[in-house]
Length: 147
Image (tube, rainbow, N blue to C red; front, side, top):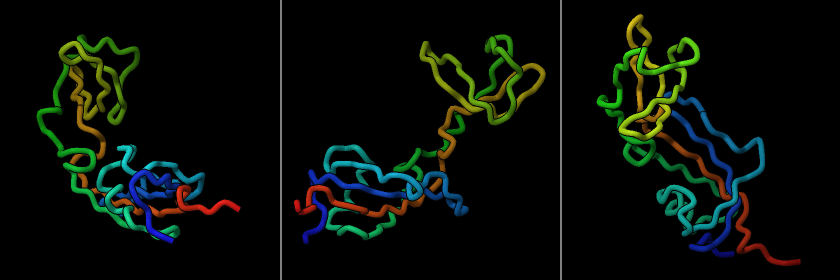
């Protein structure tokens, strides 16, 4: 049997792990994810790591922030006057709320609540973190022999 190649359709299980060891994504309890290599359906680093792998093999890919969810950008943490937000309920730290920035609707995380303003964070919640991915090639559908 030969290893995975571009255009092979694969069934994968993966775990996504934060720097402290917290697993925030894990497909192993459910059905594997189906992807086709070379179709830009997953991160290019994952595709590269899977080339040549056989069924049952697990690869570990460590992505620095700029290749995962981006670097944390301080300029995306901004105060907004409460009266400009027109919120239906009192926000709490950690809530995700809609805002409009330069005419574009965005969803941001509430970082702080004061009597006059809400400080919001437009970064992805995992921005600035190095993320580790364990990816297991469960089955290569392109290499499976017909009965």
